[in-house]
Length: 256
Image 1 (cartoon, rainbow, N blue to C red):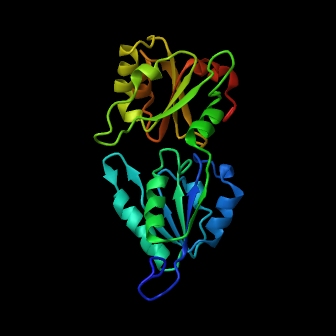
Image 2 (image 1 turned 90 degrees about the vertical axis):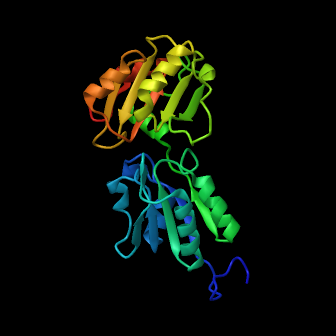
Image 3 (image 1 turned 180 degrees about the vertical axis):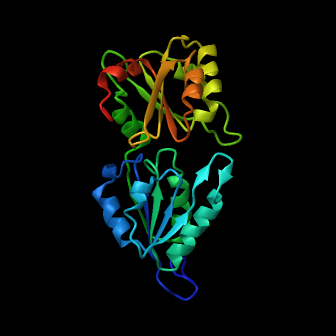
């Protein structure tokens, strides 16, 4: 039997790995909206906003494959297998992922499973949280006077993956964007200071950026943990470290 056929000989369907952006539905691409309108099944993550899910047609089956810290609706291996099975059943599938599927979205792992099974797929990029959230918060990630480099890292490392390169993250004239780091914020700040970052290094934590529930808290490495606790921020929240954070009050526009 060909790997591109189901046991009954049915030609496989099609899986579109679609970036849903950071939350504001107006940030969806036209391609994303068109594919959602055609979908028979939508497999979505926890980070996909309700406003974005409103684009899913009523006839489409919805499958929540969301994952939060220590609370996984489905294991990654099960999600991979589900996408393969749906594709081999001949379904038009949209795998909807918050932000961009290739930036800390495990999109590459899912496509590897589809490729191995011979299921046709495509990828639709989304606006990553780093870009969308920083823009809505009024924090430019680069600026000639403050940052000539921008680094994306995850605060939620895979077991056995080792430490982040803290000595690189404390270098001056750069912006560090940390995904999925809210629960690790105290340790992240301590590590940065231990490796030479000044205690007054500016930091911003943005909760649910680009949505009506957006909250921006700014401070320093020494103060931000207490400020975030007082503000009772919750996930999803993005952390931005760097001098560009000092521009936030001047450039804030969303919700004004």
